[in-house]
Image (cartoon, rainbow, N blue to C red; front, side, top):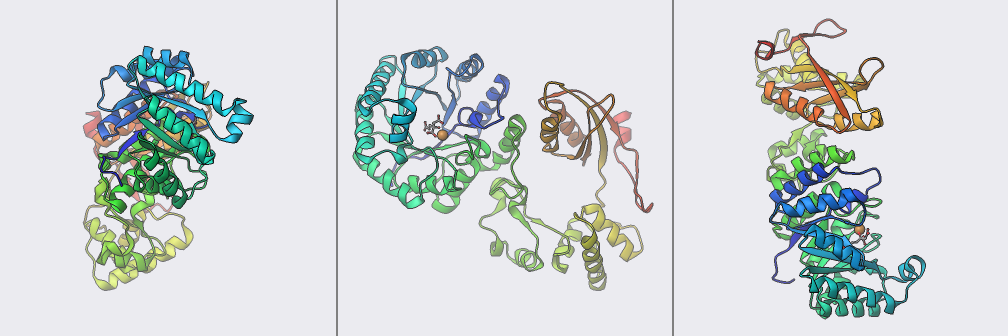
Length: 478
Ligand code: HCA
Ligand code: CU
């Protein structure tokens, strides 16, 4: 391994915007870039200026921000693309061209020599105009070794101080990646980037192997966005490097979840609950055997401490839960019970869970009250409940807007409806501040044009037993 520091290049704004269905607005790009910079990303690939006026404008605006991160434009080896990059005032150009046989013969219809000539010309032109240069032999991992080495050496000698080892279709194994990066590293002077696609789910593993072989920049996107199945996700790469290889890439890990939610919202692509590191379930424990072990010693079923992400472990209470889990949950709610009551509550919860898909905190409180025959004295989870009627942009598919809204913290359900409004969202918040934050996020959602919020004063349920008064209303309405 080299002694050089390893840093992250984030390409959410370039590779990430190549995700089918994703298109960021200029202001969204600017906000994402600032957040990436704050979080500690060392390089931001801001876009390809030749794609559109909007992309160019976003790169220009990001470059103007004077962020700590190096700002890169991703271009073809043509003068006009270099000129556009100069007009955007970026720090570096990343010049890419396919080098593998299929790219040369079927896509570019160019010979090895023609490709080399174009690349070297573009590197010289960029250097002459004061730009830093990275060269990416696209599909490097399927390029004949002799040609790959030759063109990388030439690019390096012509002034590309970085070379990106692009596993464009994600076909490497970690050992193959380690071997290839080691070979390039020992034969070429430039520093190496890793650009690993995730077609077979190996992007993170291949990135780690590449770092062990001497590469010093890892390309990521927030939430792993990108062409097809995307590239290595920022959160997984930065946490895995830290936890498994003790390599600190300077990322503020505790802010990764926040960044992920912003990008979910702006991209419309939502992560699964079982996504590593940032997924809702990443630190949830369900089976009785697991929960009692974790409560005794978290190490038993945790790869690393959730607190590094500012997260807490969660004990799931449903039919798989044992008494330890139920006890921990009731303790958390400030409800104290004896052993006999605990046994009965646990049995009742299991019975209920056989009939109901999800056990909410309110179900646990209801079961506890039933067993104890009294209202529980501890902190029952009183929430402010709101119904938000939403008018949406008729040009955007309503289901897409709902998908964005449902990802906002505090939104528990959303319905597409007929009539004056298009959508109704059911929101829950612990206090007025959280309520306002949730409403603000709904209003800021792309496609939301107008909202009207009604606060629930009393809530009745079918069995007639539960009737909750929402708190904090006087405060909101004077
Ligand atoms: C592309 C190419 C690229 C380039 C990667 C890089 C790839 O999608 O246009 O410049 O490091 O995967 O090969 O993203
Ligand atoms: Cu790519």
